[in-house]
Length: 420
Image (cartoon, rainbow, N blue to C red):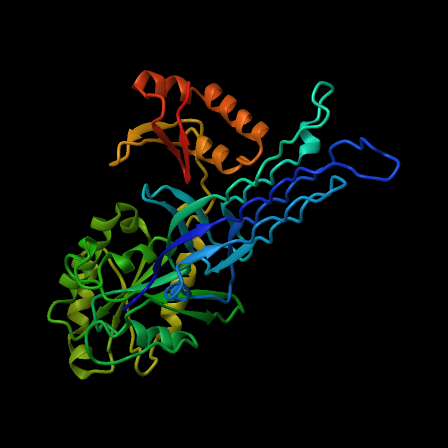
């Protein structure tokens, strides 16, 4: 099965905990607080590796976690930062968040990268809470949890020229003849189960990247046959070589059907310049019908190059026309590859609901992170968390909802007893 997409779950590293510590020296009886901050957790980054050609490496492993930050130390020493986790992806990878499908980045060039999960910040040590009125705070923060995200990775091959046509038109044979690619070739439909890339060297020394796109049949835009899993790759090509099967019962009908599928999937695909070629001219039957086919194409305002991919006949002419079309194609014909970032939901928002056992559940990014960063064993930390609940409006919302003394309130992994 062709795998050109992957679903993964990434978790950034948790921030290191800040500590409660006081300076202790022989002749300094009241050294004051000197607990250090925790280190930042590691980020999760996707980065293009040019030698990578598929997403199959994500088949066996879909969950990834970056390293946590180190714990703070005495003498105001900060913990070490967590090591970032860098995941390699092939050029042409689209990164979307799930389940909303929002586009986060389009990674094309070698070294392109996007930060997909930010490491949690380190918790503050008690030295950060000292004031003139509170000179010995027994208060610190635990590290902030790292971001978690589900991602959809989708590969769209990057090529100057895409070779399209009906199944068994000879696309893979043509790619092998024009380049050093070694695609699987056999005489049955859908031999090509994934697009193949090859590089053709022109007489000038310039190069063209070509891709043979598996055969398109009626209904491909709806996923019929190998379907839209391959149509998406055509979006990145600047020119198409449309290969007609000279042995087909009706090559003109094949031409119209393939173009109709391109337009049905995305109207922009129909605007990509095409170079027509009629294959299998080494067969006497094709050679005999070529003059009539040529005239039929001319009546439609089209010209085609007669070739034999098997015997490598007239391929120089075809390559020259393709190279000329690429040179004349507007640079903005290809889709934008600028990473897209949009703001997420308000982190301070929260919602209340009842769990099946009757306990209250408070859900929200900021309130859950605040609970996770609280040292529950320190009274000052608990009081600070209560003040934050009041400041975020959680206490007022619970009262309005009818919470009663003694009832359980759950926030993230923590259970609290409501008291007035």
